[in-house]
Image (cartoon, rainbow, N blue to C red; front, side, top):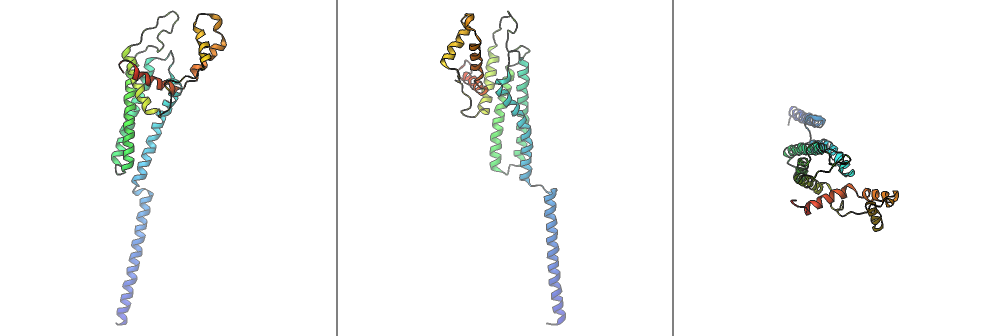
Length: 243
């Protein structure tokens, strides 16, 4: 083989190596571009979407948790319309969250395990939405929950259908929100002796209505948690007429 051909072969080999080097550099630049935002990782986008959605969802349930802690936050002077407004807000929020989760599942449905869990979660949100809607139906009007709030005023009997709606709605939410074993429908933190003393408050003997017994009565009520009350409402809903 002549020297000319040898030099030509060496030149071709060098050019081939240079071509591969350039190609490698171009591929590297493309990868860098992808990582810098040119093409987003679908899994990372999915998780980001879930985190962003979770922030708004958490805000709703922080409020809901506060409400449970304060035994639904309902007082004698609370208006029915205020309860209606609160549960209507929960219903609407659940609806929006459910729709957004549905969109995310549709877009990132290639993650079977995540999709299954999210769809299960959507089902639970739907039950909370329906429960909130039911409660709102039973809490309409400007009347105060206490009914007779003025001295000498007779209490008005509660509308049966409204009560049923309230209990059914709260029961549906309780079954989703409270974990198994959380809250007791039969909760009673009052000792037998204290119960007898508390009973004396109502026997018409003024001497028995002393501070000690009044304090026991307050402690008896305060010792039962909001989750206990909710669980009791749900249990009564199972035992009550029309539930």
